[in-house]
Image 1 (cartoon, chains in turn cyan, yellow):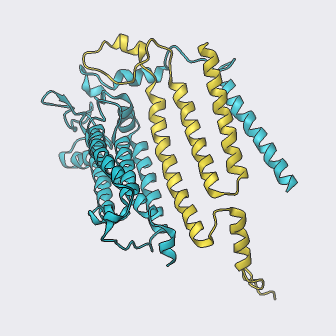
Image 2 (cartoon, chains in turn red, cyan):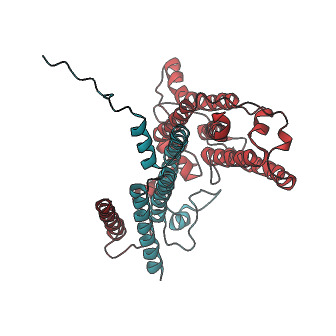
Image 3 (spheres, helix red, strand yellow):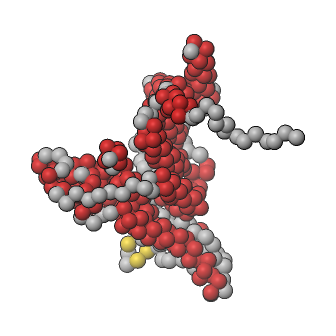
Length: 264
Length: 140
């Protein structure tokens, strides 16, 4: 016992030294917040929204979304697949769980005051989530953030009204799996449609092709009727929103099953 | 003054990393390990965000406004690349946490405890003493 505690103390010391050395090696003496930004970031900021030459640009005003869905699109694609595989693993671990419905769900959950407040919050939060998903390319946010907001709202609903409320209203686990599949299929088809089109039209096409490039004329228009839509990024944000919100809903439904019921 | 604050921030982040590594290594409770992993990933994300900050007056978020002057914009905007990296890192960390939460719940339902010492004790108690885990090869 004594030896193990010494070992832990040693590890703690090493971690401490590593952590402080990270802080001090960023600059010579401590860490200076820079006045300027790096050349790569300068180039990314410059080329993300060039109205005069859209052929060399991603045409997304919100630069973080431009980086995520255009400059590093394939990285984000595989990140979404990691999330997908984690939820698949969670469903596989809990595959024997069957939730029996309680029809008198209005007697479950917290008090009437909390329920009324939650109903108001639900409307506001739903509007905020959809707004963030649809405006991800021009304001801060995007599909993932909007999906997280809606999922946390549904978690509040599960706590306040009980899980039987959501299940009796029709938001079951299978429906969530279907919504998530729609989101993921939309994501993949939006990514690979330029390549399929290029095979048909006998031109060049690329994965994650957002705007027309020099060699290939494929790509949606970034502006429609005076509104900046950023072509594929809007679609990708919406599909990501569906996939993330439904994935979280599956997790919350599976996790809200009490252990005592399982033992019976 | 700003230098002092930034160094205090970074040293506290280092202390956070040390605490979370201590929690992951030494605590036998799986829930406490999970909390420590969460603290670790959040601290690393905050470090990345701090690296992307800049001293401008005032710093603005990396969003192109309509009809903005690029020369003014580039003197104030913060670095967008660490923010994009952090967004990716948050999703990956979330996937890891989801899987670990389900694993912890599964262990609790099978063994009745989330303490890894107790789980190992029950595992060894339930194993009969004469059963060999690997079949011995016949020796000729």
